[in-house]
Length: 296
Image (cartoon, rainbow, N blue to C red; front, side, top):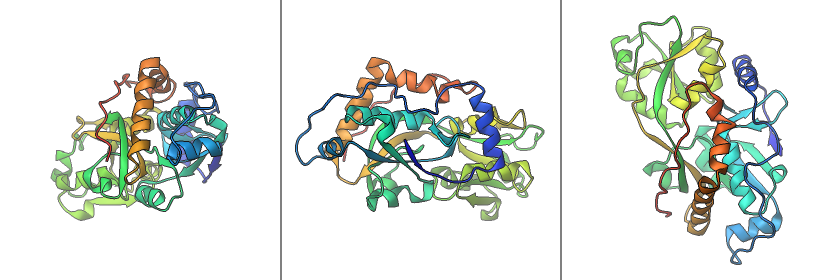
């Protein structure tokens, strides 16, 4: 497994330690067996990747439970395991996956530029993004929520942000949550955007912001690793279907990924991928693989 790496922030390192204490993840073993010499129609993305024997995957490095670089410099998480399952179906071993750090703001760009073969990065399927890329999946259904310091009793959900106009909420540039939260704010100045959620967590710790918002499963990872410093408030207020981003119009690759995910759900590889990653976070429930959207 090859990484294009970065330096960890203090709060992210603490989160890693908290999750690592639970075990799981962080190696080159896959939850699905690697196909032996699979055959694909000539000229397809599958045939090209299988022939070269490697794949480049865009993912996040700061998402506890989904895509997180641990203290040994290895990636672990549900998105990482989903990528391994897809690679295995192509005959590509986990150690032959190259991972590229892909924050929210550049996910479409790296696909369009050909820097990656696919993106698995808590990537919500929506119409705007689908104008530029094709989505396979979804493989998971999340929902947006809010995280605050444990002693904060003022912010109890999105509606309380407008009632407290001095409260600053943090999200990530180019993310769906950063767009969704705006209707709940008293003014645009209430929202601050960073490149990574780990920076939002740091800002919450040091009092620069009073809330962080993104998908509940991501926030639950930060809460789990915070030693009681953070908590989630309110109910989830959106639906966020996570998909696999690929080159626009590659319907054959999209259908292959959907078939691979369905087979993984049938074999138990999907469940194992969850239980050894995001499923280890307190309160996480085993999801059912959602019905795939049409490939286009």
